[in-house]
Length: 235
Image (cartoon, rainbow, N blue to C red; front, side):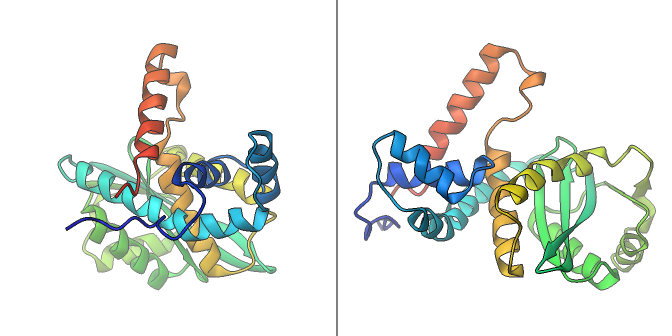
């Protein structure tokens, strides 16, 4: 059975839509910044069109990227996870963005809650383990909610805590914080959840640790990631 293209009802080409969505999610640009950049390339669209495209296609792109990565990573052993939470203000109200990061620095799961208690931590852990499996070791900060949630799951013995052990999870918040400032923060909890999940998948897809690779290897990795991005949602 032929897969139906999600771009079939759009007059704009899929290449332009992919480019606009990638610029908005990957880089700390506003909607109007993306509109101006596309104008420089001779593409005339409104910033509201960019908003509609990322809301429509961003989750679809992220879902396909996440599905491929989860399928590929299930063949490997998850020997260490880093868990951390960061506060995000929505209309002056504090919410919490939980993250699970693997030993290589890839964000596995993002989850938004209103509280930072045992119930929220347990829901976050169950969601992460259901999708990615169970790790051998879990590294967290000293938040007691992690200990209570892991005890409910029977995983309290393999928890590790330390002053610098959780730097991978702490550093994973930096790209999101830069993006949050460009967006002038969030106004609704579902929007935060959607963007955090999509941003994490797109950030994982493109190479960022260029200081760990030589120039030739980095160019090859970047070209492969871009070619794979252009092949997303191809019917």
